[in-house]
Image (cartoon, rainbow, N blue to C red; front, side, top):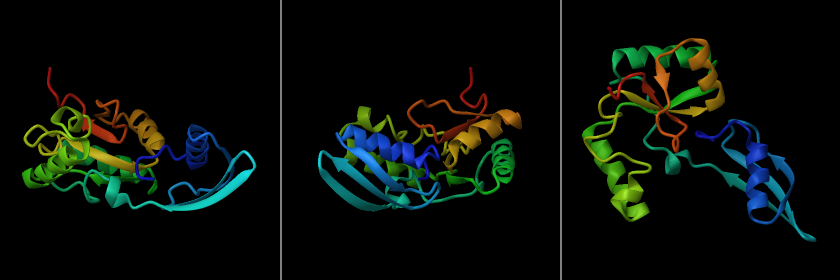
Length: 173
């Protein structure tokens, strides 16, 4: 999926175990929007097909580098090129209105500003609104290794959002 580790079989095995089941089979191609799994719970077996609707989990519609700080845009463009299409931008610059919409949705979903803040910055405080952040999708492990290998000025300041990358030193001292 867009925020996955590019190890769908391991994720399917983990979810089965969390539900007390055992993964029997997984047709889960990396990067695909569909997965078919077979799980066993005792003597019972069940097969399910899932189709990922990225729009329901993505922070914003797919975007490019338009509106980003020039240094961030250059670093992201270099990263995307080096990834061979395995990494993409899910969300880049956000207008104030886009951020307000995301904030309202987060409040409705999580029930309180404190809970919503774990996933969405309030309007006026998002690094996306300043053009200093991107959310990446695809192979995030590859993205991290390319940041290091290419010495790109990017980092991930949010431990709960491994897809979120910002321009180094953008948060100030």
